[in-house]
Each structure stands twice: as structure tokens, then as C-alpha cells.
Image (cartoon, rainbow, N blue to C red; front, side):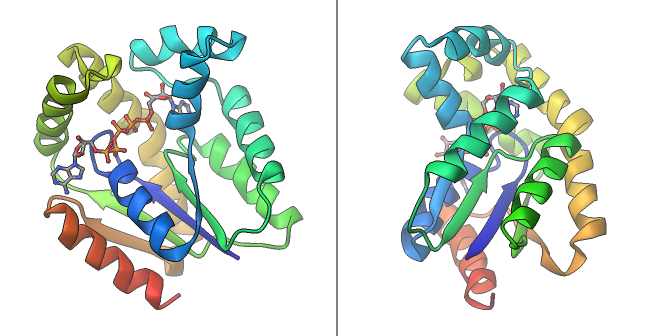
Length: 192
Ligand code: AP5
């Protein structure tokens, strides 16, 4: 059972790479952003609560996200493993995941840190706003808020894994073209 985490700022290419990785290695793609957007679309109580927070570029509460993840993992049967995209995003979420995996006698095989300068992320998200119209990409102030949230709350998660899972921690050059980023990631997964 593989457990692989993709961590990086908004626009670093987590979702893009996650789709290709999960397909190639038959992993269950677990994107907390996608799950939340589906809740918003279905106008569930959780979705209605989450929408305002997401549209401001802030993080949804740990309690909501951790419960969502627990349900997702419990409901998923017959898989080679999980690819976590956009989770964990706070140290509390990382600790909760650690506990869940310990209970299942599993560990984290790789943490892939998507690294590139911020201006690249901003350019990509502004371009996506024109193409796909995702509501949290439309306003530059919201994009900046997402980056601020990332540096305040998620960058410490990167440091947590660098410290506690040093051998499983890999830095990916996310500024390259999509195909090249994928090749670099495959070289790492193939060695796991
Ligand atoms: P989420 O959906 O996770 O959004 P995000 O982290 O802001 O990430 P993005 O989807 O914007 O970027 P990405 O890194 O996946 O890049 P992508 O591949 O899409 O979260 C949305 C919101 O939900 C959060 O703000 C928060 O409110 C809430 N949330 C989610 N998880 C949470 C959690 N765990 N806790 C609390 N709240 C949570 O690519 C972006 C664009 O760039 C695309 O157009 C793509 O085609 C392009 N692109 C990708 N790679 C390349 C490349 N190498 N070269 C050129 N273009 C590229």
C-alpha cells in the first residue's frame, strides 16, 4: 500500500500531476479541494459553509477536512494506495493523517514538494481563471490570500515532513513543463 503526498502552493501543479500519477500507478486520488468543490456544487450544508471560506482564499477548518478524509479512506476499498493532493495543509492535519496511518500499520512512502517561484503560480492561476473560471482564481487578492495561507499554515507542514520523514521527502522542480515534472516524479515513485 503506497501513501504519497503532493505538497505545494496553489498553482504548483498538484492536481495536474495527481491525475497522471494516480492513473499510472493505480492510486486513489484524494483531493480535498475537489471534494469540497463537489460539496459546494451539490449545495450540501458543508458545501454552503465551505464556499464562503474558499472564495476568500482561506483554509476550511481542520475538523471538517479531517473528518472528510477519514470517511474517504474508510470508504475506499481495493486500491494500491492513496495520492494525497492538497492534504495535509496544516500541521494538525499532518498529525491526524499520521495517526490514521499508524492505526492501519501504514506509513508515508513519499512527500513530493512542488517547488517554484511564486510569480509562476500567480501567472498559471490567472491564466486558468480565463480558461476555466474557477471562482477562487478570478481575483488577484484571493490568489494572494491563498499564497499567504500557504506560507503561514502549509509551509510548516513541508518543514514537518522534511524533519520527521527526511528519507521520504523529495523536492520537485515544478517550474518545468508538465511532461518533465511528471517524468521526474515517476523516477521517484519507480524506486519506492
Ligand atoms: P485546492 O483545490 O487544493 O486548490 P489549491 O491548493 O489552491 O491548488 P490549485 O488547484 O489552485 O493548484 P494545483 O497546485 O493543484 O495546480 P493545478 O494542477 O490545478 O483548494 C482550494 C480551496 O479548498 C483552498 O483554498 C481551501 O479553501 C480549501 N481546501 C482544500 N484542501 C484543504 C485542506 N486540506 N484544508 C483546508 N482547506 C482546504 O494547476 C494550476 C494551473 O496551472 C492549471 O491551469 C494547470 O493546467 C497549470 N499547470 C500545472 N502544471 C503546469 C506546468 N508544469 N506548466 C504550466 N502550467 C501548468
